[in-house]
Image (cartoon, rainbow, N blue to C red; front, side, top):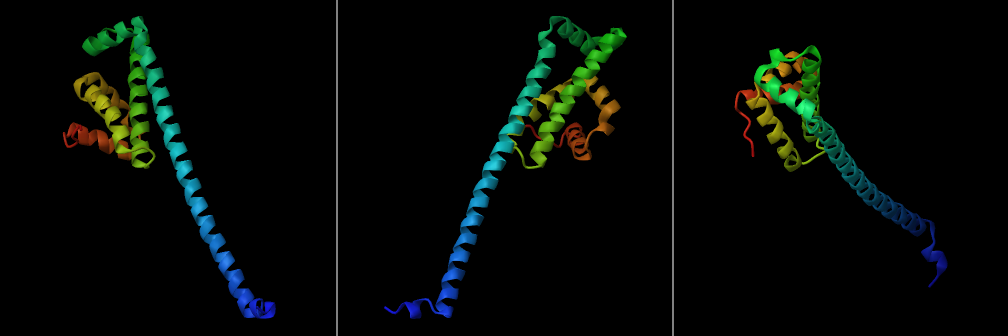
Length: 163
């Protein structure tokens, strides 16, 4: 075989273009793999963040003094001291913040719907069954994203089914 024929300009150009094309395809596959790994990492990180927020929120109720205050607030908010009212307000607001966080992650495609459903079911029940949650929401709803406000409105209109 004559090396001059193999490495003539036309063949050499074809070989180089083939190598470049294969390199580009390999790079695209590598980038797709890296992007998928990054997406998984973000999903796990947001799931962990939501769990940490939930655990911190649960710690309020583990404090028996606050738990008593919260139960009293659900029955007669007006009987609370200003400090107790502030505590309950912050507790419910933090719950709403967690709810919006997981809702936003769902809408942004960061978590799967199945991951969102449990959170949504819990907070929907709290919201629908406790007039105090509704009152605090009415006071603070403008601080939340419009798409989350729409979600709450749908819940109150009973257009959102709990799965």
